Image 1 (cartoon, helix red, strand yellow):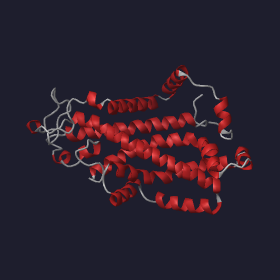
Image 2 (cartoon, helix red, strand yellow):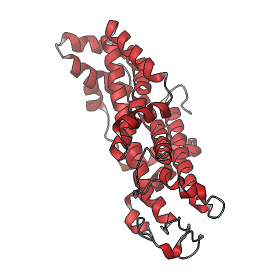
Image 3 (tube, one colour):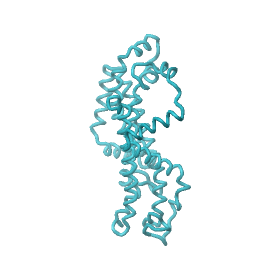
Image 4 (tube, one colour):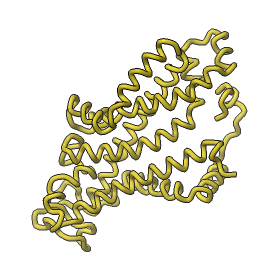
Length: 300
């Protein structure tokens, strides 16, 4: 989206993109940035696994089969079983739902709230901007995992609390990036024109300024998704995230997976591989998306 053009004019002048235009854009993206295309394909596979989990899972992920405890990978259990006889493949498939739920929930909330705060801070300027940025600096001084741990300890465990705990440390990072883009937008003539027309602060921020930071917002969103998946797995591994019997990749790595690392290595290898692929996919796609949206890095 071009900076400096009112959103109403863009909406009226922009042509409607059809399926053919989308297919052409996707094909060009895949040719110019193959690593990003691989990351995007992995994201699609992960999304399909989450959506079709009841169809793809070969067993009930919560069912205990004590007659098949620590069974190695085979025809009955493709990726083996854990110490409770639960099918590892089925739990990984259902674990993708937990990863995407927490990942999308935390990243969308964190990136959106941070973008609104950053744009509002740049718009008002002065003491408001100074005070807001000092508060953001305080949060930025703390590592992601430490701040998430502090929040989840206060709120308690559970999926919703984990989403909130991961959202909080992402807000200042998003606010900082959005503010840097909004500082230039604030000086555009159409913002002054909107003020002269009598529009309120909320309309100017949300309708005229915020849409013009969509490019960095989308890049942050994809980057935050990988971080959120890793943070959720870390909190679950420490026992402060998603709780049993919910299928979660980080939860599969703790407890018996550590105790039986030598006797049943598949209990740790396959969930760890799922976490790695998920994080790598979003990181690769996010880096390529940043290059595609940044005109200074765009491949001619």
